Amino acid sequence: MMYDVAIIGAGPAGLMAARTAAQRGLKTILFEKKKHLSPITRACCEQIIMDEHFQGDTIRLRDATIVSLNNGFSVAYDGPAVPIADKYFVSPSGIKVHFAYSDRHPIVIKIDKGMLLQTLAEECSAAGVTLRLGTIVGAVSDTGDCVRIGVGDGETIACRKVIIAEGVNARIAGRLGMNRERTCLTAALCVIYFIQGIDGYQCGELTTYFGRSYCALAPLTITASLDDPSVACCVVIGNSSHPPEKLFSEITTKGTLAPRFARASVVRKTACAARADTPLRCPSKGNVLVIGDAAAYVEVEMQGALACGYRAGNAVAEELDGSQGFAAYTQWWQESFEFNGDDFLQVARGFALVPTYTDAELDYLFGLIADQTLEGTYNQYKSPRLLWDAILKHQQTLERDQPELYQKITTLNPSLTDML
Image (cartoon, rainbow, N blue to C red; front, side, top):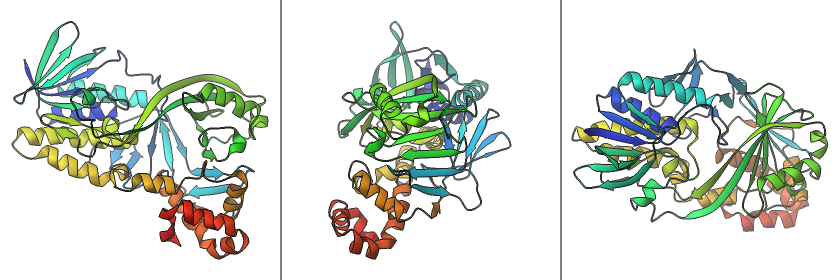
């Protein structure tokens, strides 16, 4: 049997691609190695982000429906939702920089990703998609006329086009030679601890702590969970040399926040390993299209995955109708995700706070803007840009009172000089 399109991976991108392709009238099959889509057992923030034009879309949650304002799709979602309207960056001594929208609408909304995936899977089935859960994909070969996919014990599926949506650490695109120009910048280990009883925890806040005093390798984030209003998510990022478990022990016993964990208890935890590869800027080759996290620098977030899937499903339909669907998808992909820009690494490194600056320097810099509320955003590129823009409004004070720090900023961070 020949399928029009096969999708590999049943995350938000893959399921949305399958639903869209089937709704366009394509004979569609989807493979997923997991037997169950819910609950989510891998570390994931499980949230939709309210930034406009972020990761390919502007998303809103309205009347039990996730609505795409940029791409025009919608997905039913009637599960739990926890809005977070306040974001804080906190210095080593506890100086806070506040991010919030003036109308107090959420920066992010925590949702049950597993429930969303289950709903999408049901919509895929209703649209006629053949769902093959618990199926491991082996060899994939593009013959030009079709793509052959090896699954199970010697079974081969033929299709006209393939969408690879297997997520971060994707391997199948590599087998097809599509990752040869990509570079692995680092490999991170992440554990999300679900913790009850953190002293001073506020459910409606997303707080990131910067500085060595916290005993974390990377900035430490504490935010809401869906478990219970009293249960927080503590996101600890490490690597093979600095395992998250060891970091968590030091954070909770030796770091500045240790007293707040004195009566806390871990309810559960999830974990993942993630490669940070440079993005696949040209995500198509022959009859194959790679989408979502599989083509990204780390990740595209949930709304980015949904947008990628929607665009990819339409791209395949256009290709099979004789149009340049993959070329149109590639143009949208390159224009919609900031990490596809030539200078994204320079910008990210130029805005870095840790480990570039000492704890004393961070306290001084945060102190310059401690009484301000900056524009609400989750965007990991925009957030430090707003922070530095506010700090550098105090250029004269910096240059007068902290000449060595000012010199360090301008020398180590050339991408900031445009703000001066």
